[in-house]
Length: 183
Image (cartoon, rainbow, N blue to C red; front, side, top):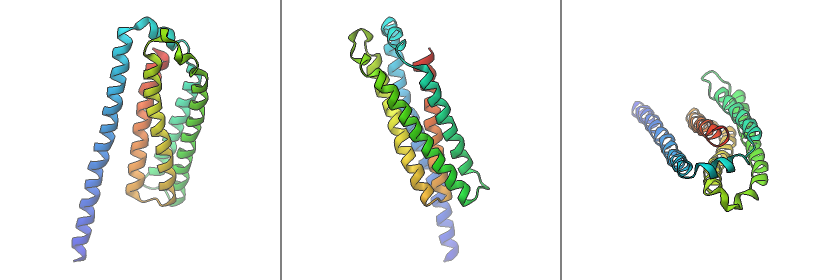
């Protein structure tokens, strides 16, 4: 009977991996649709988008890129196969902390952009900018909370789940950063 339980547990972990990848890919598809909408709108009104983009602060976005990549690095350290419980917890908590730093920098950046966003001459740029980056920011906030929660009671599968999703959040930002700030 004990062997049957072990087999069932192994099958359950394999199923969890499938669900993880379904979740990760669904997130990428959702962001892909939003990015596609932004790209189409930018093709329809390139002058307004270019004028609006000039009001963004790429220095703050670059700082946030470094913050989020550092967070991802800490998450990767936490998920290493040989990591001790202490190293795992520390990596997850540092990843969560850097996620909150990302939040603080982004809110500071938003504070300077919110007044500009009402200018109708910028077309749909700021609507899409706040929608896409705000959706990403919600993922960062939620992910930071889950990182901290998993650090409290880490299991191998929970660490793998949240760190994989955290890397998806990083990947999305790596696409958003040049799209909004550098193009």
